[in-house]
Image 1 (cartoon, rainbow, N blue to C red):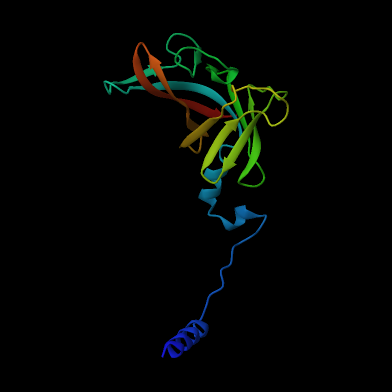
Image 2: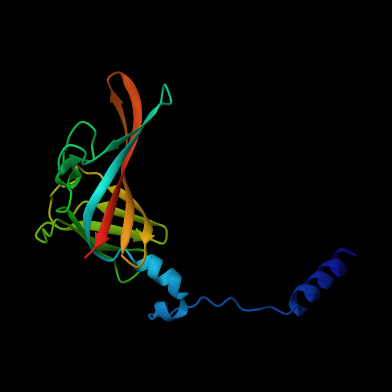
Length: 190
């Protein structure tokens, strides 16, 4: 009886119509994507000029939320609450530029150039859902202190090429309280 059941099961599985699984593989992926998806995925590629920004702070003990203007007093600010430790954290309104060169294949590694300094480019790790500025791929420079900076961006104005970038999410003790903070920076493509 057991052999008959096994035989019927094998016949049933073999006789079923099966659709082969095709994975599209093409080097001209923009033509196979919806044009809107392609624009959104590749929109960050190129150079951007900093126009403004805010720091958002949350006191993790009192749950108080605070918004601070980056450029309220002067055109220079820091992504770090206590002051700049690395060049990447220093931001100057209408002067700081970020240039993204996306890799030809995703996932992959491209390059990130801060303030047109092409002699010391950072790495740019890109996956299907993550963009991260990393330490340089060549040399023994620690431009980020051995760390990386994930970047999340929203397209604010497609026509005028404006994005908002969320950067530098940090946990830190400030005046005896634990805080979580990040910055949102407004960039315009040039």
